[in-house]
Amino acid sequence: MEQSKLVELVDSLEKKEKAACRKFLQSPYFNHREDVLHLFNWILKQRQRHKKQAFQRLFPNVEYDEQQLSLVMSYLLRLIEQFLAVQTLLEDKIDHKFHLLKNYQQRNLPKHFHQTLVNIEALLEKSKYRDKQYYESYRDYHWANYLNEAPSHPDNYRRLEALSEMTDIAYFSQKLRQICLLTAHQSVYVVDNKMIDQINRTFFPYLEQRGLTGNPAIGIYYHGYFVLQDSSRIMHFRQFKELLFTNGQLFKPGEVRELYVIAINYCVKQVNKGDQSFFKEMLSLYQEGLTSEVLIERGRLSHFVYHNAVAAALQTQEFEWAKSFIFQYKKVLDEKQQESAFQFNLARLAFAQHAYEEALGLLNTTYFQDVLLNLGAKTIMLKIFYLLQEFDLLDAHLNAMNNYIRRNRLIGYHKTNYLNIIRYTKKILSLNFYDKTEVSKLQHAIESESVLTEKEWLLEQTNRP
Image (cartoon, rainbow, N blue to C red; front, side, top):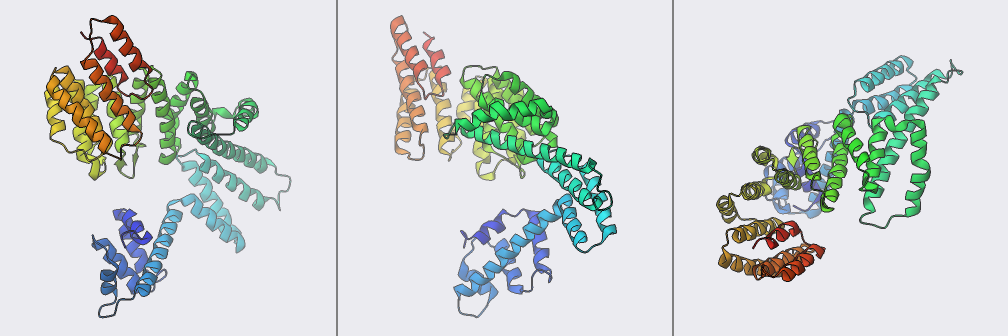
């Protein structure tokens, strides 16, 4: 039963949603079956859900009938889906009004129709968003007005001009967003270059000639495309980032998160090309994204964001900010990853501040269930043993780390990277620092290695006698 669509859907509901859903199921307008409500309450209370136990609760003293239980489960699933649909409709006040508008038109109630149009315009003016959906709603508003006014004012073309403008902005905003997604896929999948060439030759010149790139809903994706297409377009990155910071509130959180990912990935590419100054840009993106809470989804912060924000802060030596962030955002991490992520990043901070014993203490007293986090912890310990010149401990640690990597099948493509870290650390341990040819040869090998995340640290060690 745990793997059923019903249980997965119930578990996905937040506390307020569960309470609202119970009221929905109690309403005779939507539900006439008591067993459906009983099943919902039973699922909420039970940690272990088994079909026979559920059936016993619903139908005491009746022989188990799986088909009968499946029927009740099916009814409940359908009703929860209806509840979610109704909730979505009620939350979107503008969409709700458009449904009313259609009804009033069909019922030939002109007063009701006109008042609803007035209400829609007021809601649109109050809306804090200026995204694709906003312009689509304004388009539909002008279209409804035009149809309403056309019989008595057939020469009124102003509505059609407004309608055309709103249609264009909504279309180009959506089209540009799709183009950005297509361009992002270029780095992973084969994309038709003829399509990209056509976009560059005709689509963008048209937007520029019409001056549409000044609209934030269009401009942010216009600059975003060039950021994704060519990492040398720093001018476009600056404009993209400025639009993101000044106009990010005009877009819904989910869409803004996509935009932040574009900007952060650009910074990662620049850093990987050797421009360390983009760690500062990356940190500013994380800081703004956290302040505006767009990087927090459904009350949770991704552990990837948690780790990466700390990494950017440590690279820019913003140690106080890193410490404050580690403690402040621990509570919004997923509970399963909370403690290990917290301890790991405290250890990273301690290591960056050369508090090696403190870092070792944190790493030795924490169990890292996540394989990559475990390997990250082992890599920090490797560095500490080397820097403290604890070479016997380091040798044992390298062998244990090597065995762990080769035994673990969950590491995947990261295996090559961590085996390279071990291999080059061992080469440095046996390196004759007074033999300039040997040192130069090893440095060249490290620099030429395509899969090696600790390249910079390893090269630093080759310069130490």
